[in-house]
Length: 250
Image (cartoon, rainbow, N blue to C red; front, side, top):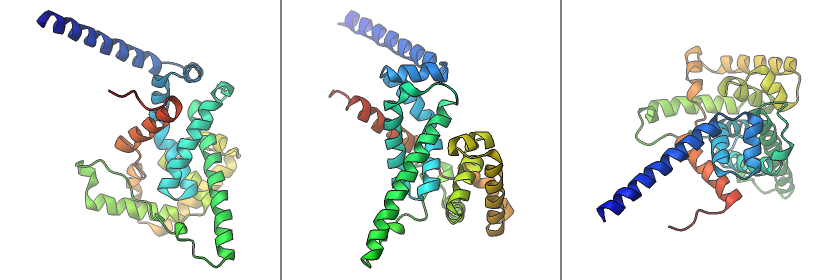
């Protein structure tokens, strides 16, 4: 029994080492090769891509929709659409930018549908409570971590509320450039807009925020709109389950 257990342990260790090597190999792939692996329905490639891009795509979707749950739905739908069309990815832009364009289009579609619903409800003189639900998006924080303190939550809430009040075209550019850290060229590519237009919108967004917020508040933008940890992992698992089905029962 001891010898069998030892052999099983060795086999388990070997399997883990192979998996680690595979993960490193996948992480080193070019965008085109990674897309090809996704096209071959490689779950490890899907996990890598979603983990890398979940936060950027969530922030882009939220900047349009202003609603956390709707933004997550838009991101998940965008992933499914993107993976269905992964064969069309030619590497002319990065995979991250390609995905960002898809999630922006998905979010805009959600917003147009919401506007149609609101129009029908307004015509019937019914109050659309969904317009106000989660208007001020609360950040997600890892339980037990020091940054989840009440003071930081309040500060981020002030920041997010101020950004939420920007006009939509300013808000999207600001979130993608200053919060997510994309370059002007990447934002222009994702929005199919001229870089000069992006710079103008960004300038106006920053000016409006300066009028609403004290200068020291801007230093806290890096941690705003968190979508990591459990949120990121949950999104990845939902996408993998959608594409490959639920994991086999133990």
